[in-house]
Amino acid sequence: MAEGYVQVDGRLVWPGTGPGPGWHGHGWLPRWLWVVVGDRLVRRRVWRHRYIEVATGRTLIARCPDERPRLAFSVVVVVLKLWAWLSAEAGLLRAEEVHEDLLLAPSARTAQRWLARARRGAAWSEQAVRDTILEKGSEPWPAEKLFPGGLPPPEGLRRRRFGQPEEVARLYRALLWLIGGAVRLQSSIPCLLARARGRWIDPTNQALI
Image (tube, rainbow, N blue to C red; front, side, top):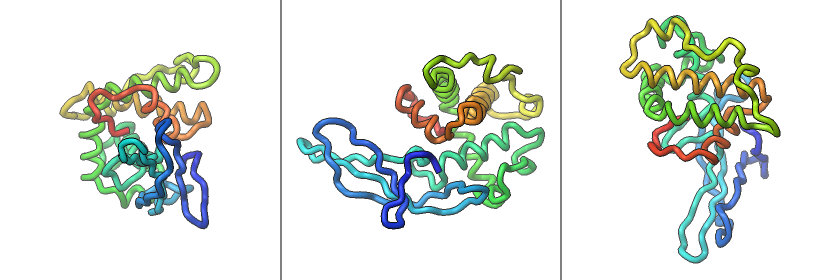
């Protein structure tokens, strides 16, 4: 799980922050989420803080960085599943998963749906994640320091056929920036993505990661 979660009376809580002046805490809302804990895929109940705007009565949920709307799996599962597929020499059904549990769930059909959705927002994902990684910290990180060998797609990806090859290549680079940046900067994937979403607005509203 990402940094920022706390345990309250045995519950896993994401407190979040209010959207600004005029908003006050208005209870908690839970949701179930499949997450990676250690090397296992487990289903956890996560509680999110709900806020209400006093003047209008509008409510807002402080969503945790691991979740995406209408997705039962955490964003880490999505990233690992797509990375195993796109970085492999073989196709989806022969990809080597990071964790054995990901061989069983989510299904290959689900991963195909994720790819179809993620590639539509690949241009934003690549730019936002790249800028987030390079600007993280007190000094910009040069790309050559993070990835001395450059960022070309692997030959296996070049040989395979996808409906939108350029979009898929951009998604591959976004995933490489994200995973490589998390390792080099000793950060977490959800927190890097939350930072990217907070600073760069996705005009298409279609980016899965």
